[in-house]
Amino acid sequence: MIRLDHLSKRYHDVTVVDDVSLTVETGQIGALVGTSGSGKTTLLRMINRLVEPSAGRVWIGDTDAATLAPHLLRRRIGYAIQGHGLFPHRTVGENIATVPRLLGWREAEIGARIDELMHLFDLDPALYRDRLPHALSGGQQQRVGVARALAARPELLLMDEPFGALDPVIRARAQTDLRAIQRQLGTTLVIVTHDMEEAITLGDRIAVMDKGRLLQYAPPAEILTAPATPFVEALVGSAERPFRLLSLTSVADLREAGTAPGPEIAPETTLREALALCLWQGRTALPVAGGGVVTLAALQARAEGGRV
Ligand SMILES: Nc1ncnc2c1ncn2[C@@H]1O[C@H](COP(=O)(O)OP(=O)(O)OP(=O)(O)O)[C@@H](O)[C@H]1O
Image 1 (spheres, protein in one colour):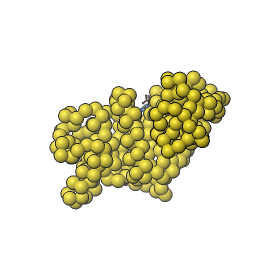
Image 2 (cartoon, helix red, strand yellow; image 1 turned 180 degrees about the vertical axis):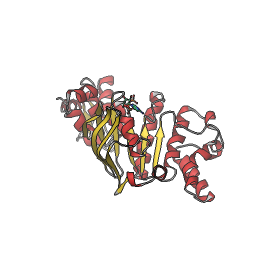
Image 3 (cartoon, rainbow, N blue to C red; image 1 turned 90 degrees about the horizontal axis):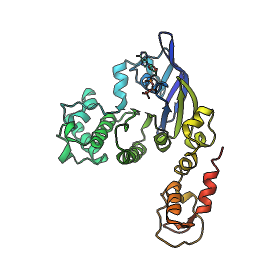
Image 4 (cartoon, rainbow, N blue to C red; image 1 turned 135 degrees about the vertical axis):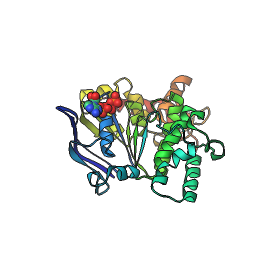
């Protein structure tokens, strides 16, 4: 669990983070969104004390972060940034080994951890372990960056626009992988993004920031259906809101009895994808694998449920 308690940052007389309080529960993802300059990165960096707060406290579990030496704190907290920040002259394996080595892990243990993480991130150690970062694709480098951040099994992982440099297809895959791995490891994650779509996909709760202030901190469905201010509403985008709402739920939740012609769709298909299929193929119902159907009428009703 991580708890930010009335956290502020001032540079001279400018307040760039203004009295922000929020909690991310253990094993959950908190996504910080907002326009450029709203204070997201500053807020994130106060958690691992790359930036010292002007006021307020950061609690990691029941430890006050201010009571730990910053370099020890940072060994406990994974940190991954846009452009991955890999050491260019160290191999993939050596990059991943960075923090375990600082912590004095035994070589055999470090080697096993490198292999384990590379498999987890779908990178064959035999092929990639001894390569330098430049001999990897952008997406692979990004995965190594996240693997490195997770190497010492941190209770908390901080990510700042980790997928900002990736093309949309690879980015979607990276998000899905991150979510699956985060669930599997039970890591608590705080991620900064300027992309509302990414925040909705990843966040258990979304923190919307503007001019250093926290405007709303709520689960994605609530941000979409009950934006706290006109700014949050604008950021969510009124035109896209029904689709974003549908992307939060899978057809398994809207399945009803019945049959329909055509190929079956998987129960994990999102309602958004199901709606696209209905509209694109001119169908009024789609059969769901395992029985039942999802209907166009039900999809429309669900999308309209998000009308504000
Ligand atoms: N070291 C510093 N000294 C003075 N002002 C700073 C410093 N670091 C950040 N700022 C200012 O604080 C504000 C918030 O910056 P921050 O990087 O936290 O925003 P952000 O929401 O992460 O923006 P972006 O999405 O563009 O990265 C900005 O106006 C920035 O210029």
